[in-house]
Each structure stands twice: as C-alpha cells, then as structure tokens.
Amino acid sequence: MLPILYSFRRCPYAIRARYTIATLGVPVSLREVVLKAKPESLLALGGRSSVPQLIDKNGTRYPESLDIIYWALSQSSDQSRVDSLWPSSLIQQNKMRAWIVYNDRFFKHWLDRYKYADRHLEHTEEYYRQRGEVFLKRLEKRLAKNTYLFGETMTLADIAIFPFIRQFAGVNFAWFEASEYRKVREWLTGFLDSYLFQMVMTKFPKWEEGEESSLFPMKL
Image 1 (cartoon, helix red, strand yellow):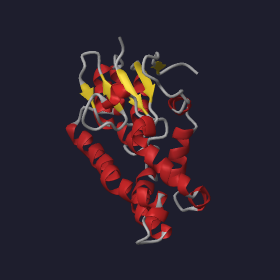
Image 2: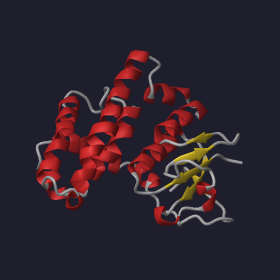
Image 3: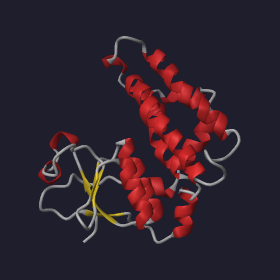
Image 4: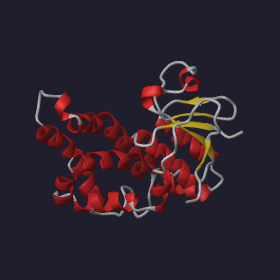
C-alpha cells in the first residue's frame, strides 16, 4: 500500500509537493480533489481539509506542502539527489528556509491581491503588482549570479517558490514578458519546459470514493 496524496492540480502548494516527489522518484497514490466537492475520506481526517495532504503507510498525516516535501526527502533512496536539493549544512538550510518563508508569508499575500484585484478594491491591480515586484527584484538580483537561487544546481528553495512566480506571471503574461525580470523569466521557463513539470501537471480525473488512486510519479 502506497502513501496517499490528496492534491489539486493548479494549487501552487500542491505543485511544489508533486514536483519534489517526482524529482525524488518517491511513489504515492494520488487522489485529485475538486475543492468544491472534497471527498469524504479527506473530510473525515478532521481539522483542515486543504490540499495537498499526505497520509503515509503508517497513517501519519502530513497536512502542509512543506511537511510533504520533507517527508519525501526522508523516503528517497537517492541520497545524492537529496543532498543536492537539501544540503546537510544547517546554515544553507536556514538560508533556503528564509527565502521560502518570505515567499509564503509575504509574496503570497500580494500575489493573491494582484490575482484577485477585483475583490480587493482598496488598491489598484498595479499597486498590488508593484508590491509583489519587491520579491521579483530580489529574485532577479539573485539569479543574475547563478542559474538557480543557491548556485548552479536546483534546490528545494527553487522548487518551493517557482509555482508562485508562475501564478504571478499568469495574471498579466504580456506585462511579465515585457518586464525587466529577464533572469526570473529564464529561471521560470526552465521549470515550465521541463519533463518533470509536464508530469507534475498531468490532468487526472476527479477521484471518487471507492475508485483506484492514480500512481504518481509516472512515465509520460
């Protein structure tokens, strides 16, 4: 019996969890959730019924995307890949966490308002975009030095952040393509054009109670 991953295809938190799982080749049973009609088995877990969530073979629950990511690291048999994504240096780990925390706590706040500016009428869409650009400027400066945020190798910091930049770019793609953030565009394109991203964004049918789950990751 494989661990069960409740997921939603377009959710950036779910994307980063699936991307990590796919990168590490850790098999799970994926259950695609429709947020307006969540399955009873997810609701029956109690507490938050957001996605992604993972239930391992022992019944342990991992209710947040970062919990799932760290779980995947612990399950991988490819230690060299684990070390590449998450170096053993506590100093490096803390630096990566700082970038992820900023993304999750601050950038996501402005991303949501930029994406749904018609629901947040206190300011204009342009205002919310400019607030989000504070993070894009930091990323651009960082990526001007290296291919990825922490050197020439992809790490968890990159995986954890790129789905949110993808959402930001999608609000007004013409603006993003014409913007000054050339290095950010190149970095994002590297993810979006990857084989792994195609796998991660595969469309699965809505999972129904009693149905078989989908094996993930799979070969395209």
